[in-house]
Length: 180
Image 1 (tube, helix red, strand yellow):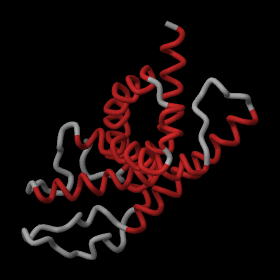
Image 2: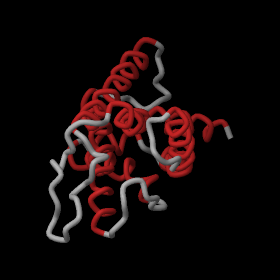
Image 3: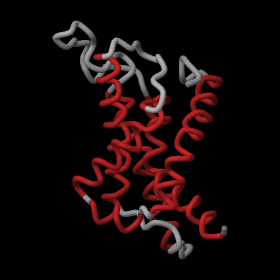
Image 4: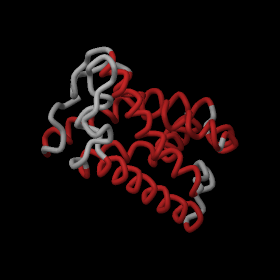
């Protein structure tokens, strides 16, 4: 039992640099859309107005800042039971989370789904898939050293729960148009 509780905290610790950027992007968003308002051959927007440069870079920056705090705390408080973050891992997790969100938005537009329209599972796991794919391509050693099976199980369980809670909060404080 104790091992699974530690794995829960380890999962949250490992994913924090990937979890923070989506919420931060909603707070810092606005301005120029990443797709500059352009459409694909199907006549639909590439990403949509909800994906902006300010949101993307603000989100990545916040994820990296959280990761830098983790790096400091890991050393300062001897948190060796938790995954070891590095500057590269937190940058890849943060960037990958928002790249996964962009890829999901691209696919949503191709499927005719509108901005803010719910897409079950894709809305919850885009950040996990994006961050893990990017880190797997560039820094697989970190992934295999830090994400054990129990940690992966907790990530799968807690991601949709955290996603829902954070989106409800974002809706009530006015940074999201919909609570999902």
